[in-house]
Structures are given as structure tokens and as C-alpha cells.
Length: 301
Ligand SMILES: Cc1cc2nc3c(=O)[nH]c(=O)nc-3n(C[C@H](O)[C@H](O)[C@H](O)COP(=O)(O)O)c2cc1C
Image 1 (cartoon, protein in one colour):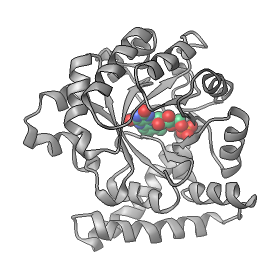
Image 2 (cartoon, rainbow, N blue to C red):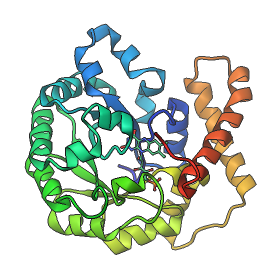
Image 3 (cartoon, rainbow, N blue to C red):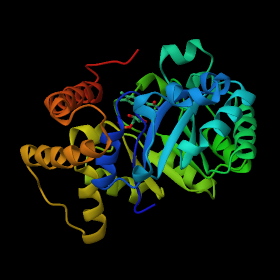
């Protein structure tokens, strides 16, 4: 890892050229969001690319990249991890999903976080079947601090996880509102593996504060990366020099798009002109969607 900053997994939002752009703009790693382990485990091997989908295909030049699996059957998750490991640098196990469609399948955060023994078994099985570092992404509770966060983190460590990512919100909060960073600190104090802090980092100063207040090893940034796409560059500069340049919104977006076009030229199969025509508009649309999520105006189902 080049630095301590990670772009959070955001299912469906991060096509390869966007991920590469964030890597070039200072994220040490990007993540691909929830992939259904059952679909991967049951696929014909030559269909794997189809299962991962165009957005999820990974490229050498964007590495390190983490690929996230979700599932509620240990054998399926382990088999899926084994099959997709060539696409990934790290495999992340999602135990933090608040969405109804995940709950309906039995692998929402509520199902998984309430069963620390199952998480341990799943991590162990995946570690056994892969040669990659395995990480786990958790939340800090359902309605409040109602799950054994420390026990889960320790179970992950005992089962061989390489790191644990803590999204410091309760499931009921979805993706907005205050993040309870004290839980990141608590986890950090109770495990030896690296801890990734996540939740409500909206500026370089927030990232610095999270590192200082919680002692976490890495900071994971989600919605904030769309609202300020230079957040990784700015945070790295702040951590290295103690200064953070102020950049206007317009200059921020221009810088992002310059990098984005360079990444797109390398990665997008569609004609570049067609891509350019739609990409700025799409990015700005996703950006305002993320502003809606951060403010609670937009809710994911
Ligand atoms: C649109 C959207 C999609 C997301 N998809 C995933 C996902 O696939 N897997 C996951 O673990 N978290 C997912 N998340 C949660 C983020 O990874 C992150 O934990 C959350 O946004 C909190 O970080 P933030 O406060 O910096 O935005 C998603 C969040 C959003 C807004």
C-alpha cells in the first residue's frame, strides 16, 4: 500500500476507469462492491467475467484492488473466493450490508453480525481456500451498540483475517449521519491486525482526525470521494506536509476529469468521443446522488 487511504466499495458506482482515476489521484487501494458468492461459486469457469460484470472486471494497472464477496453459506463463499482470486489483490467479506435485498437473501448485516461464530467459520474457510489477504467489513450494531463488535473483530483475527474494516455506523443509519468513531478505536485497541476506519470522512481534515483519534491504520472513504474527488490527494498532502491546499469546486472537477479521461482512454472499450460525451454527465449525476445520500435525502433500498 502506497499510503493509508482506501476508496470504499460502492456497488455499481465504480466502473474500472473511475477506480483507476481514484488510484491515480491518491487512493492506495480501491474496492469492488458486493458480488454474490453463490453466483460465482456455481458459475462455469469461463463465465466468470460475465458474472463479475463489465464494471467488476479488474485490470493489472489498478492493483491493488479488493474484491468483495457476500454470502451466507461457508462453502459457497470459500469456493467463490478461490475462483475469483486471480482478479483480486485482496478479498473482502461483506458483513455490513443494510439493504433489504441482502437481508432477504439471509446475508444482511443483521444475519451476519449477530452470529460471530459464523463469521469466524467463514473467514477461516476462505483463508484456507485462497492465497490472498482476506479482510472483513463490519458495522457497529443494528439499532445501537447491540452486537459484539470486539468479539467479531477478534474472531476475524483468530480465523486469519489480514485486516478488519469498521464502518462506524449502525445498520439503521444506512449511509448517513454521525459515525461513532470511538468504536473504531475500541476495535483497534483489542486486535493486532490492521484496522480500517470508515464513516463520515468528508475532508482531508476528517481523515487526519480519524487517524489521530482512533489510531486506525487506514481510512476508507466512500461518498466523500465523489463530492470531493481530490480528497485522497489532499489528505496525503496534509499527512505529509501538514498543509492542505484549498481548491475551488470547478478546479477540483477539472483536475478529476483530466485524470478520468486519461484512465478512460486506457480502459473503456466504447469509442472515446461517445464515452466523453456521457461520462462527465454521469459522474455529476452520481455526485449529486451521493450528496443526497450524505444528507439523508436519498435512501438506498
Ligand atoms: C451507493 C453506495 C453503494 C455502496 N455499496 C457498498 C458495497 O457494495 N459494499 C460495502 O461494503 N459497502 C457499500 N457501501 C458503503 C460504503 O462502502 C461505506 O461504508 C459507506 O458509504 C460509509 O462511508 P462514507 O461515510 O465515507 O460514505 C455503499 C455505499 C453507497 C453510498
